[in-house]
Amino acid sequence: MATIVNMPRLSDTMEEGVVAKWLKNVGDKVEEGDILAEIETDKATMEFESFHEGVLLHIGVKEGETSPVDKLLAVIGEEGEDISAILSGETKEDAEQETSSTTIEDTNSNVTESTASIPEGVNVITMPRLSDTMTDGTVATWLKKEGDKVEEGDILAEIETDKATMEFECFYEGTVLYIGVQEGETAPVDSLLTIIGPAGTDVSALVASGGAVSNTKEVSSISEEKNTTPEISKNSENTSSTPSQENNTNGRIFASPLAKKIAADKGINLSAVKGSGENGRIIKKDVENYTPASTTATDHKTSVAASPQTTATVAAGVEKSEEVKNSQMRKAIAKSLGNSKFSAPDFSLNIEVDMDNAMASRKTINAIPDTKVSFNDMVVKACAMALQKHPQVNTSWSDNNTIYHSHIHVGVAVAVEDGLLVPVIKHTNQLSLTQIGASVRDLAGKARNKKIAPAEMQGSTFTVSNLGMFGIENFTSIINQPNSAILSVGAIVEKPVVKNGQIVVGNTMKLTLTCDHRTVDGAVGAQFLQTLKTFIENPVTMLA
Image (cartoon, rainbow, N blue to C red; front, side):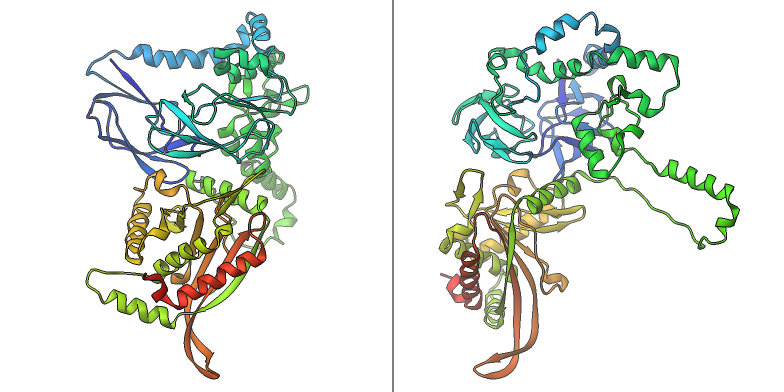
């Protein structure tokens, strides 16, 4: 029997994926464990493994194409098996959406009845599919409770999947009105997890509707457009509409929330965008593919033609700009660091460290056969030990609580081809210098080769970013939320220093600690840096 393979959610924040490369073709035999494709997520390009065996009968997303999570990616079954019913099922669904304008009046009474219990502005959140094989999830911890206000990007809960315990991010803002799965409870994927909306909204009827929850978004979409659809259809039949006419009725522009957000970020006027969605609705790809340059070029050309005198004052040369589509990783970096920079009131502290003893100790350590320790490894170890003495820095902020982590997981920023990844060294304080060095090299190699797993980049409690190898002496990093602090490590510089009242040649390194002032005060950050300086300047203290 044929098996449908959907676009997997290969990271906790992944909303869509791009098929970078298919490693199997239609007609190829597939064994369980074979790599089907390389899929670009918001964090890395990752190999997607098949959990089924058979023949690859259909490919639903071509190389280079983008698809939302849980949409048809491929079909695997027996050789020669008829899968027309599966494919026509997809086609039928699309057709029903396209022709909804002709059937909306027939279903009007049903829609009204279905949406009567769905208050305006309310969003139903179901148990997410956080791994490609996940069928149910367990709520390990709720970071928000009923009545709490949430913002887009807040972490709602920690959810245990079949592979790892992962943070689940909120994509809406409002108030937590209802929690459907309590801590420690297990629920199937797509079952009611929580409801978010305006404070004080009565959602009792929505909770009681049970199975109707899964259809909430579809019904809301139909309800929103049911009164305007016939008019739009009529206009499209009688006139050759401009983009603004096709999706604007009575001054209202129909666009998805994501399309509106992207347009606002890019400064695009939605009235100039032609919608390709249902009934001319503007969707994400319409905004991403919109290029006003063509109109501008035409206007400029006309203007020049009408006023030849103007051309005499224009400087020679060709102006050229190229738009390169943002990768999933770049989008994730922009979102994460933007949220951090504009939400956390941060401050930075600087200190200079004498590296003479560290350089001598490293030379001695690396003289041991099969041993390799870098200065960065020494900094990571020193950070872990300093965090033990200053637990206030090893924290995370939430609206109502400061979360103190008893474990110490240090993230190490690694530059990769498409951006930046942060592999995490788990229980760093329990590792020796050589173990830390081996872990950093292993994870950094995986990150650069796009082989790192999502679980290996999650759960950091503190982050180290080192640009010293590029000759950067001093810089300030953006906090890697939900950490409370990040350390920026500069280059080791040979310079004149004062020792015992004498000017001598020494080696120093500058460190910058950026802190979230909601959890870490200036004095706490300064004390942490002093402890860190002591460990780095006296490496023997880290060898115990």
